[in-house]
Image 1 (cartoon, rainbow, N blue to C red):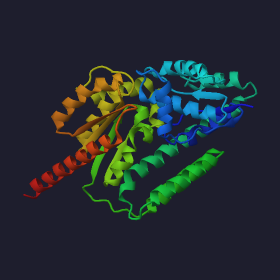
Image 2 (cartoon, rainbow, N blue to C red; image 1 turned 180 degrees about the horizontal axis):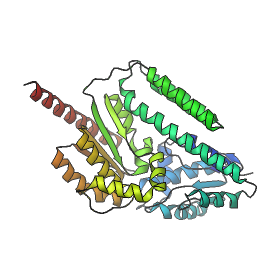
Image 3 (cartoon, rainbow, N blue to C red; image 1 turned 90 degrees about the vertical axis):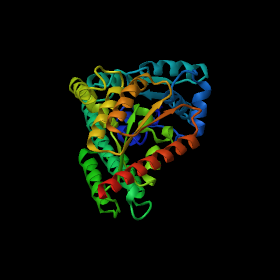
Image 4 (cartoon, one colour; image 1 turned 180 degrees about the vertical axis):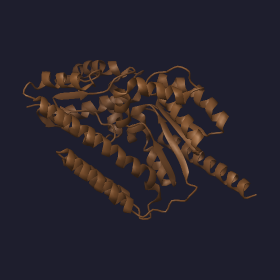
Length: 360
């Protein structure tokens, strides 16, 4: 019997579970990411491989140890397009026996259906289309609910209320089998979240988070950066989500043109991956009067490194504070939190200074 597994990235398993079930077998959910995960990935990875590679490899090893015999990789672009082949060879050299399904560059529906059909010949086209629609619907509401929580959780008057509601939402979302059920769960959760009492100041500190998609979206890899910010009473805005990535894919030419338009004059050409988008978002937030920006990336991520000179210039032009975090397997959590604390203090001093000037 097939036992199918995958690498973690945030809460997105709850969205793409219907697609995994198309492969016909039992789903093995890897253990939650811990220090053991990165230790396993670091031990067996090439030294030059970036942190997402190592986290994914650690997830695969933990899943195989639980009995998984089918591994799925999805994504594309950057060096990630080659990672599946390297990871497969590493795992085989460690003595594991498994089937590797690599969906990189097969993210359009026709190519994806063909890939699933090759693995599970009994799969019907109607079943595939239903699962695809269900996955997209789950993605939409997952990102919508997460965004609402991200912006407001730091201001709840009763600690843990948002977290409990969100946990309930994930459990219910994972059990939905129809588009109507997904819509019902999503809308009910949003309505429940809106009823939660919050105490948010009018001049709330607003901070954006941009950067490489995995480190942005997998909280363990960035030491739960968004949670740290929220606990300081900051309104956190993050724009890289799987929903936004899918929109970029299906509207590729339009989105690339739009991103470059917003990135000018700081970028005149695309720098690869999500680099152009990072500059475009930073430019928009600076114009909107946001208080600061956090840029995160894996160590040695070239597209995001290429954005940094543009971000430096933008920061000077708009007097817009930007802090940069680079993550690898040796990154100190204490160091990250210390720098984040200093960044927060700087934002508050700047806000108090502007408030004092306006009063005078």
